[in-house]
Length: 181
Ligand code: ITT
Image (cartoon, rainbow, N blue to C red; front, side, top):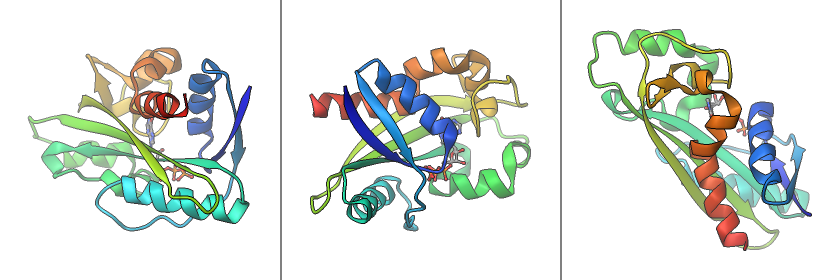
């Protein structure tokens, strides 16, 4: 079994990544190391910089996962600021911002950054298209899952098993695994 260090402070990401990669015979070991996050409009440079920083700091190959939800009617907001917005505003305030908005389209994105010490980082992007719900629904998942609808059900309603078959994170990890192979 291949072992990969996942640098993140987010236990929910670890749970999902573990479940997805276990099926590919990859064991995930979490390292809770707070890597610097660049201020950028896109997630790729943030994941790339973070992966390089963490690989060099720990002197071992690592992955990081930088994710965000891009709401079309809000010109992509919160996008790379998703963690800040979730922490300080939360889903209810996002729903308020979307009040009266008929265009509910949103893209959930996850970028897996992989780096070996002293090497160039690689990034693998996964996306899933959906809609922002009118109210929070469901008890599964985490973060924005109760307001992100995929085919009429929120990610919080479909639960981990179904989410991990179609999510932005699953799609990014699929690309990463193809590259590893
Ligand atoms: P790291 O230590 O890995 O950076 P983080 O939680 O700060 O953990 P990000 O910087 O990537 O992660 O911020 C992404 C935000 O989007 C954060 O608030 C997450 O809770 C949320 N998020 C990421 N993936 C999600 C998912 O699959 N479902 C719901 N919310 C998600």
